[in-house]
Amino acid sequence: MMAGGVGGGATAANGPQPTRALALNVSESENNVEIQLVALSAVAQQVEYSIELVGNSRSRHSGNTAIPAGDRQVLSRLSTNVTDTWCARVEVTEGSGESYTLTAGDCI
Image 1 (cartoon, rainbow, N blue to C red):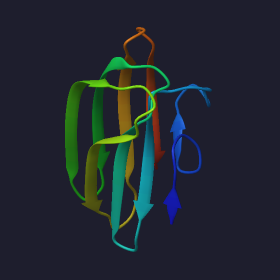
Image 2 (cartoon, one colour):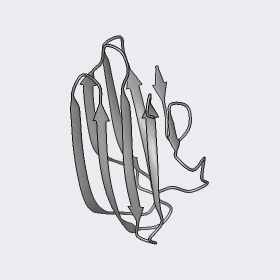
Image 3 (tube, helix red, strand yellow):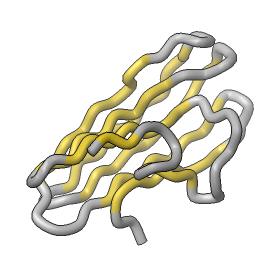
């Protein structure tokens, strides 16, 4: 199953927003989940992010990067084995100062 962006497996904690610089893409198989943190910003800007994927193990990655306008880039790719539940959570701060959280999976 493939779910793209915010919605359909990945949501912003405060509900869908019209233009976010970052989104989650999720790919699930029987015993594995892979997430991609994707940048596609309407404007060139600096973004800071911290991503965590929890399944049978816990993976974390953080970054602070400049993203160009209109250029789709995969900023991070994480995967984990899963036997039951999993959760991906990304904290984002855009160059404008706007902060938001993206989630996917069984996050509480």
